[in-house]
Image 1 (tube, rainbow, N blue to C red):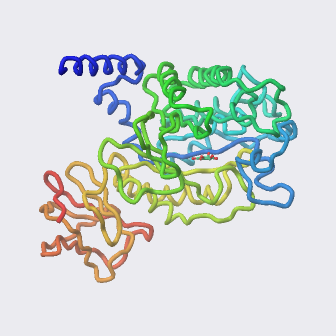
Image 2: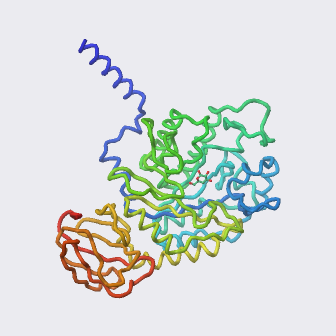
Image 3: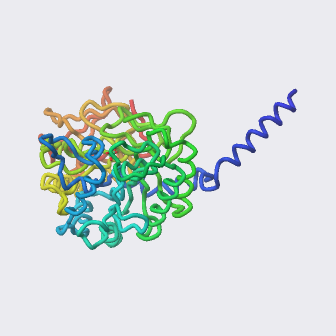
Length: 448
Ligand code: GLC
């Protein structure tokens, strides 16, 4: 009896080993090595750019559109295609974009190489539905790749699995008036998609992340996800792939549920999880600066720079990354309010970046006045509500060797009380978004 059970288990394990393709087989140490740059980076720029920037969110009196334009208006594909003729980003300057991201303290850029409308922002040999059918004679992704390379920024590609334009995407839309009468063929679609990914992964140098999206419709399956994950890793073994390559994502909270998990990290969307998930569970919150991903000329609901800085800190304090979005115009410009915000975040990062890069989650479950991050020997206290009485109460048992403000390295005195450590801080915060206090300690921090 026991033996049959053993044999049964053995057969099952052997079967599993066979179904897990080689690229997925990686030791934990190899996985950690692949994730190092991403875990240290903490901050990236998302860019949603495509022909939907031509209508700029407005159509027939409605003003709430952006990159979902084709789906939400049900515009016939043949009519939507005409936007390409008006897409001429003559003011696009890859070096300027990369410089703005870098000055903001961002370490990577994720750009839409193809969004759900299927339009490629690169010169693909496999379709005309790409930058080739615009008046713009260049390849924006080539120029970004060169600029990122020169600036030491990781270039990453967003790629939508769902494709409202390609006739073979399994849930073909009724308004796809260009599609033939024959039914869609997902195998043919996957071959096309792999062909485009091969272009993207062999012509633009090393790519940091493949950021998949649009995995939720039923033609996409777990098995196809595993196959795609392995395919991408076979072209660039060190690349990082988000969890939207598979089917396990639990809605907007972005983390996986169930057993069929693939991908290297979770993708909360427009939200920051209430707590982190412990070491080894990687995640990145992506978020817009206003209320749209793609360019919408009427949307002036901008988050303040203070909110954006605090969101970045919040993510870092929970062990995650922050991927902040910009929707450039069809002329190739970042909207002015986005430019301002990047500069303001950059001013904070210039002084305080040490509290963000290369840190891990807070040692404290909760802090009434702000957040904390840490690296060996150091705790960073990011203070949102600066104490009016000059006493910052830190629920810490570990002895503090040294305390100072990160801005100007002003030394601070620390008192030990029953409440924990009281750090005596100046009357006003060095920056209203978040003043940072550094505590140097020996060994692991012991929270009270
Ligand atoms: C979504 C949307 C989309 C956007 C993305 C960013 O799922 O479909 O338009 O690109 O999330 O996370």
